[in-house]
Structure formats: C-alpha cells, structure tokens
Amino acid sequence: MTKQDKIQDRSNFKSPLGVEGFSELPGPIGIFDSGYGGLTILDKIRTQLPAYDYLYLGDNARTPYGTRSFDVVYKYTLECVIRMFGMGCQLVVLACNTASAKALRTIQQRDLPGLDPNRRVLGVIRPTVEAIGALTHSNHVGLLATTGTVQSDSYPLEIHKINNDVIVTSEACPMWVPLIENNEHLSSGADYFVWKNVKNLMDTDPLIDTIMLGCTHFPMLADKIKSYLPEGIAIVSQGDIVANSLVDYLNRHPEMDALCTKMGTTRYFTTESVAKFSASASIFLNEDIQAEHIDLG
Ligand code: DGL
Image 1 (cartoon, protein in one colour):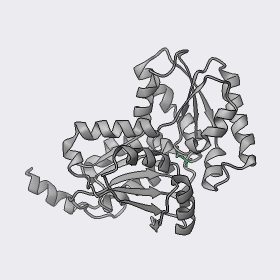
Image 2: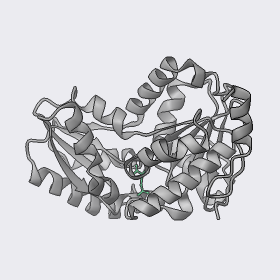
Image 3: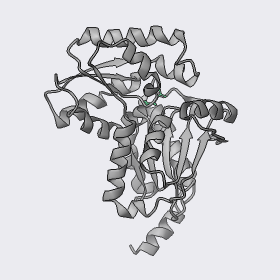
Image 4: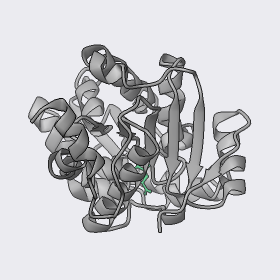
C-alpha cells in the first residue's frame, strides 16, 4: 500500500465510536488525565519543552477513574484519546496512572493500528519504574496510588521486569483524588486520610526508603505526605521523570517531533464546568487559565 493509499485509508476511517478520519497535519501534544492530576505532569513537561503546543484534557465529569473497573477506564480513556486525535494531537501522553495501568496497552496494541498507526499514546508507569531502581538503597519501595492502579499490580510487575530484588508495598488511597478534585487537599480534613494511608504503608514495611507517588494528583499532597513520614524517606513524584522521558522520546523519534507544533501555547479542555476547571487549574498552576468545555457524550 502506498503512502497515498494509507492517507486515503485513514481519511475513510470510522472508529467504533463514530469519529471520522484525523488530520495529517502537525498538532499539539495531548496531555490527558481523569481530572486535574495531569496538570502536575504538564507543568514539568512545559518547563522542559516550553516551545511546544499542548492540549490538556481533564475528564472531570467522570473522575475519579481510580475506583472504576478495567472496562470502564479503558472505554473512557479511549474516548478521550480519540477526541484528542480529532483535535489534532499526533502524540498523547496519558498523564494518569490509572489509565496507563488499565487502558494504555490495549490502546497501543489493539486500537492504534486501526485508528492511525502513525499516532502515539504514551503512559507514565514505565518511565517511573525505570527511574525508581536508582533511587532506593534498601530495595524496599512504597507505592501510594489509586485503588485501580494498586489492584492492577502494574507497578510491581513492571519493576520486577527490571529488578526482581525490589520489594514493593502498595497502599491504595481512594480518598485522595476526590479531596484534590474538590480543592480540599490543603484543608485540615485532608490530614486524617493522608496520615492513615501513610501510616498503613509504613506499618506494613518499615524498611521502605523510597515512596512513589503513583497517581498524578498526589504531588499536590506532597507536603502533607512528608509531614507524616520519618526523616530520610524520599518521595518520588512523576512530573520530572515523565518530562525527561518525553524529551528523550522526541529526540529518538524526530518523525514524531516534526508532527508536534511549536508555538508555545496551551489549551485546556474539561468535560465538566469550565468555571470550576479554570478556577482550580489557575490555583494548581499558579497562572490564569481559561478552560474550554468538551462534550464526550
Ligand atoms: N491522576 C490519576 C492517576 O494518576 C487519578 C485517577 C483517578 O481519577 O482516580 O491515577
């Protein structure tokens, strides 16, 4: 099949969700999360790659994903990815561990070849586990994440592919995402839930010397988490790790880099209230953000 035939093929493409063919033109890098958490990743990526254009999509109307089944997280994530492709993204980063754990592989292996084999969807778990081995000295690592990510076992499985000696103890923190989505994460009410989960984790394995925040929302609770930990325990947030990994990816894939526009803009989309997203994201990123609404129904 010639390139022209392939272009023709894609332009006739109808996905199971009824979205017609995608533009071949370069576009913004898509950053996806169930809500606000991906902003912690976007922030670090933009610091390292300020020239690029970004399209952020928060599925706030359906957050949290962390307590939902595999099938539902996959369906929601695929809908969002397809919509981002439709808005011109050639490359989408799932800045959400739950979506990375439950949907990434199926989207990469089953959906992308039919949707558009030239587009790419990347996740956040693999780059995180690649970084973690170098950080722990005791080889005892703690994972704080959503229930979905913990139940998927993605972190221990991926870590053990690299280093079988690392002992991973996981603690699901189902209350943390709702606290952040409702902008209650700095309130005194949040302390109880942070204290409880951090204590559970450290009681289960007191030898832990490194804690992964395996949810992109959780860096917003980093100060509280730290205040309940003994001295000397490293807290690893994913922002810089994912940003480094994306820089490396674009260096290794100049054909994808050429498909990313570079005018230094960011557009924010939410499936929920524009006013609420704009207000909360402006606080989280410490800049004035005007979000736009998107309907996935
Ligand atoms: N930021 C998402 C993650 O990294 C939160 C998932 C949720 O909506 O529960 O897992």
